[in-house]
Image 1 (cartoon, rainbow, N blue to C red):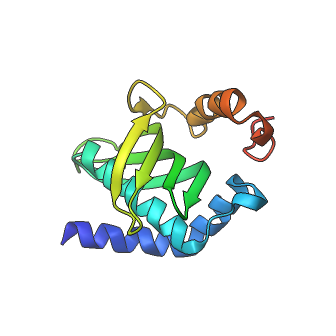
Image 2: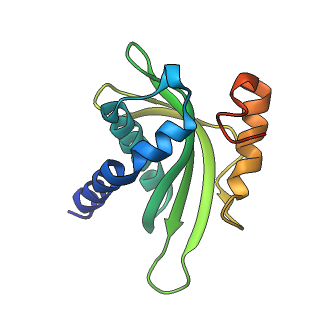
Length: 147
């Protein structure tokens, strides 16, 4: 039941906010459809839920190399909130290359970083993301907000 409530919350979040987040992070010729965005969110949530026992929230502030036709994959920055109800919540981020099924189920994930990193400030992920973009996708520097 908890899983269903969290999925519903993600879907509502996606409907309200992900389009603006996603479209600002993806080039015009590689803009995902809302259905593709939901598949990415679903796979990313599955990954976050696998790695965090007390997952309280998830956000994808950036993504690129999105494919939802023949291949189903994307590079994503995932920020998670973990809270066990006792201490203050903690925040972590990771950058993954994910593969997902046409239904949005996670198939595989490769982390660009050694592990989940503590999110020490709101944009802590951006330096790592921009390093990847400049190394692998230099034409996307401006689109990804890395200039």
